Amino acid sequence: MKPTKINTFERYQELVELYGVKGCKSNDYIQREAADLIIHDVLYELCGEKNAFLLVKKDGFWRVYYYINDFEEKLTFEGEELVAEILFRGNLGEPTEEVSYLESCGFKRNLVRDQYFAKYASLTTPVLITGLTVEIATRIEDVKWAISLFNTSFDKWSGDFIPIDMAELLLQENAVLIAKDINGNCLGALQLENKMGVIWLNHVAVVEQARGMGVGRGLVEAYIEQGHTDDNSRYMLWVQKQNMPAVNLYQKKGFTYMNKSTLSMIKL
Amino acid sequence: MEQLLKLLKGIRPDVDFENETALIDDGILDSFDVVSIISEIDDVFGVQIRINELDPENFNSKEAIWNLIQILKG
Figure 1: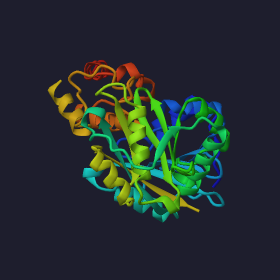
Figure 2: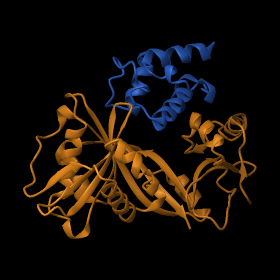
Figure 3: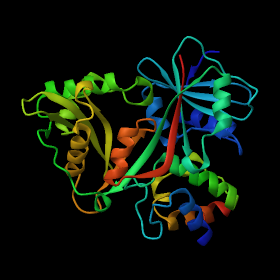
């Protein structure tokens, strides 16, 4: 089977109507964003009789959005890397039927991430980390260093990859914080983004030799202050469930789990 | 309306649905929340919401969502 390009929003709507019948399993959160994806020629379809994959072409892989109505009908697409993110409510547990179906199509479990949220008023008092300076990156070289650190610290399939040509934009938007020691050595970086009034922590990473020294905490403290306008300032982030030092840091700081998680499944 | 409020609280207990009037515009609800709400509305009220009804203004407050349900119920 080979995917075919979706050329009109009407075709996307038609697919949703056709496969998104009551009771179907789906992770299609594209919705109105489909129009943008179609304009950029990156939205494709792979349809069976009962099931359909919507595929978004990324840099070196495809992101998969599925409609599953028949667990026996397998959809296959060989020769390309595929990634499916399954969002689920934590209190309801992982969506085992969808996981099993994707496994039967050749996918394997990758990562579980949890979403955390905080308002400024609920956060603990900032702690100063001795010997650490955290500042907004003002040089393109520092931003590029941060991007390189992020891209080597996270896998590319879960939305973490930052193209190097984003460096200029991140610099202009004051979106990167850099942690340095007293000698000016870069120890870690954090990328933040203001999305409709919510300050997102998109990436944070610390060089291997500086881990466990409070660098991550220093970056998170600076991120919070950078986004602070009043007690209602809102902060959001995703963290790998297995990354216990990070999870503990956010929880102790006052972030709370949003009952929202995502399991990424990959087919290489 | 009480039934809708209970439904919304079940999905996002942290959100003040009684007072918020910019749930989408302020980024309080994301697309996963909206899809979850649509699915629950279908289950509870028997109303199917289509893509062309996904305008942010239809989801910015519990009143707006309630109005959409009433319109679709006809």
